[in-house]
Length: 204
Image 1 (cartoon, rainbow, N blue to C red):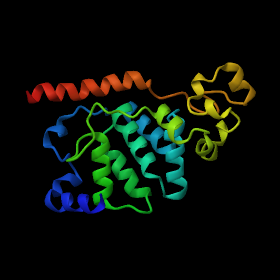
Image 2 (cartoon, one colour):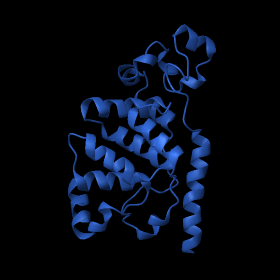
Image 3 (cartoon, helix red, strand yellow):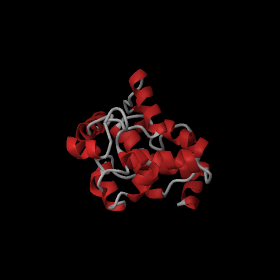
Image 4 (cartoon, rainbow, N blue to C red):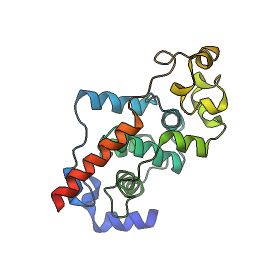
């Protein structure tokens, strides 16, 4: 992938600041104070989605993030929060120890479905199911989200579904010790599909 994206960057240098596919520059990304607050929460690992938050906290603390996590957090920023991929790409540029312009740019455009070989726009990672699949015991979550470590392993992936008694016994109060989810994933998914549908209709 590194060499592939190096060739893309060399032959299509506009991708540094714009979508590989120019039509996708017309996407209506979320902007304004609410989007800025959501972006800050994403950067700080305070979205209320544990796998996203653990990944971002790992990045902030170590300068590293596994590729699977990079895909998850990028999908969340662009398709759950509806925030322009460039904002996430530039944050990664500041934080990653292994930062490479071509690979980072290509990865972000892949996740946002604006790149040359991007995932289909209707493929939207569910952060909870991704967490359950790749961290089934919640060990990674407990490491980077110690406030959730007292929850039963299977409840760490979606603490808002844990139930009041379980949360109380673990000493967790959502909104105080750990944030409530910034968005409802199902509603955010519908908004992203609508965002791309408008663009598709205009193209036709």
